[in-house]
Amino acid sequence: MKRRSLPVATALAATATLLLTACGGGDDKSGNSDEIAGADTSALPSATSSGAAAPESADRPDITLPNDVKDVFEKWETGDAAKDTVLSDAARAQTAMNEAIVQGKTDTEGLAFYYDGKALTTSVKWVQKWLDAGITYTGTTRYFGPKVELFNAKSAGVSFCADETKAYNKDRKTGKIDKSPATSDSYVLYNTRLEKDDHGVWRTTDGTSVRGSETCVQ
Image (cartoon, rainbow, N blue to C red; front, side):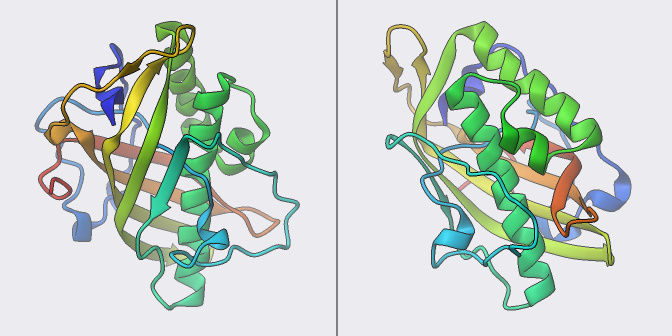
């Protein structure tokens, strides 16, 4: 999506064990790293056929987006129950980020629920950058190519790609939409670390993202 035009973007710090070789690692050779940012979500993976249901043991917050903003999680399942549970919460974290951006709030319940530690701090800063720039976004983002690795019973790594070619920056006050042509920067590679809390929720605690990654560009 055209959020690549946002003036300031900061990469999340990541540990070496987080980077999954299946997605090409985190070689930010282009210098165009972004913080965890996501896109449009009208439905979470647990509510669509493209993703796995998340466990209902925790009192999960409702996460909603406006009708003009959608996330599509393509083949967001592996068939392995443990891995699919991790993927489901990784997707929900992405959606929670998007909800915070479109709502223009840094203190949404979803953001605090699905992010923790360093990832929560940097995610709040990322949402604030959107507010400072006076923009939100509209359109559809496709998330594809998810890979998950279980490090142990309470930690995992998830990598995936985002296709933002159908999402666009929108001026928060005027509603004017920027439909600049898509480029390779409209594709983003994410590597995230998740840790399972006492309620069974896999919370994103760290991560990186790389715009224009050859792994994701189509």
